[in-house]
Length: 113
Length: 376
Image (cartoon, rainbow over all chains, first blue to last red; front, side):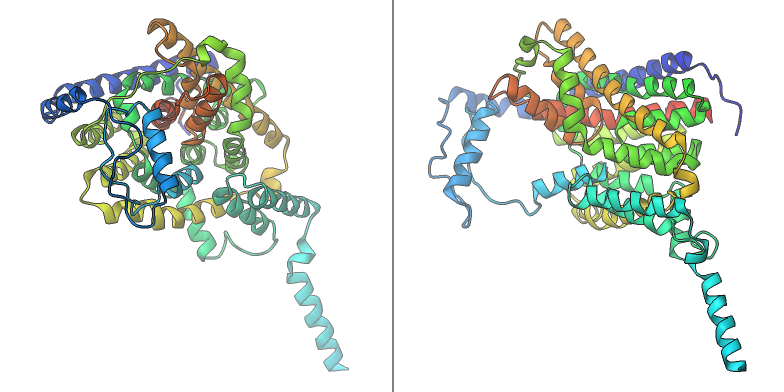
């Protein structure tokens, strides 16, 4: 093994934390740059405006097409969760199970890391 | 008479070649340790997907005279995958395919919380050097504080492979104890008013951003820190599989079959490094204690930086999300959510905490890369 640059733990901490902060700060600037040059951004700005002008829709779905097998209790829970996240200005268009199970995915992610 | 002589000699030969003849007290203790870990994994559900094969690998490693490492075979192949850092990047491929960087992209300042949480790594590094470990061993012990299993295994193999068993067991055990370790630290370092902070809804993130971010990150970090190019590259490749929308089969394979297969090999192989002579030492107990210090230090570092962001933003950032900078995804984010809800029912911090949580994965990899560059 080659000789390390230093064996002083305080110096190692200072240098490493500086580099970690610098790299992640640089990444945060890159993320802002990506957002600024996003060519799809203008289209997205126009689309929500008409929705915001409409009166906020009640959290309960108004005759939203619900796939067979999804119980009313699940629809109500999803609606309540969306409202709690602040999505009261949107209308639920459909409720259907995803091909992938999100909770199972989260469990796998937890198990892997 | 000749028959009985031959029979006696054969029996003696079978006995002397058996594991029983070479079985030591240390082997017995380690088999009991393996059984305890198996109990924790299966009954108490402590990270069972990883701890169960680690535990069984530990039991296998303490059967004498198996020739696992000497003779060509599946065990040697698994050991080859670990010793040559093949498995951790493949696990990262699966993690990248499972990770949603959306909350991070919506609020890039949470990257700094992921950076702040790495302070636990270096606090533990200092403690390890005080206890007599050399700097490479101390760095491998410190990375436990990053709460990132594959990165911890990757760094340990490069810097201190003889400590792999103890570090892996400590890392995965503490990851499963995140809901117990973090909340007291979070409550100690924050006021009730700070814990009650409600954060603004995150902005939507476009597909363009989701696709460009992994590309740019892979390029920048790999050029800056080549030692972790394999980890970061595979993490971002997996994320591209997820976000592109045209590689669903690859994403599905990376998250499911590939990840499961590699997990089995990696965990079993890690357990097989836990032989009695490697594990039953004072340094194992020291590593377990230092691992706890690293976790607590990382949580504290993230929360303290979260308080700083709270002050600088005029009360818009809840400091509790800082503890999620410890990259135990998604458990640390869930802990932020639970503690936040206890302070203010109805306060949903989960998605805000996912930003620093996934940032912590990148932060831990960067910390490992800088230590490799300085210390190898």
